[in-house]
Image (cartoon, rainbow, N blue to C red):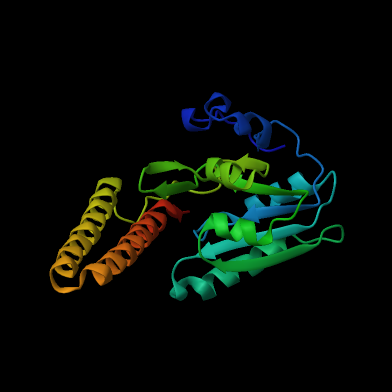
Length: 230
């Protein structure tokens, strides 16, 4: 049985109605699942102990396992593949089917790409998801975006410090970028009113306003996607 732990306030079921229904933690039993999608952060850890934990999770129902890891740097691909291969070899036995996959991108996109109805995601309490609005547990983001059950483990990975810019720097960058778009288009629109014929200036103004909204929306979307880290 996985080691029990106390959920932090950020994952309290009262904060989000889906958490009480879809967030599973020890000592709750692992429900029957078509497959376990196991998130394997690209950090150093005790693979033997973790493989034993996965064996315990799958012992009753013997679902297939998909060991999924993500890397944000092409230089980490080789070591991440080697780690996945080692963990798969430690986890595989005559009763289990173990597959591995390495994903270049975010955790939410990775899980969305492979999740199928009936799958159970196995994540880690230490994993975080960073957006321009702040940092929150990755499990909360997975449940909110994908509405899929997540079984949380704890104690297998260190709490990795974010290597991206702190929140205030990201917020300032977003504000500066958005202000730059607004000022740039305002100057363009003033110029259009001065040099273009009346009917043409109206058409060009409408087009520029539409493009302005698209660029600001894209800029916001880029920041709101967030940065997951292991």
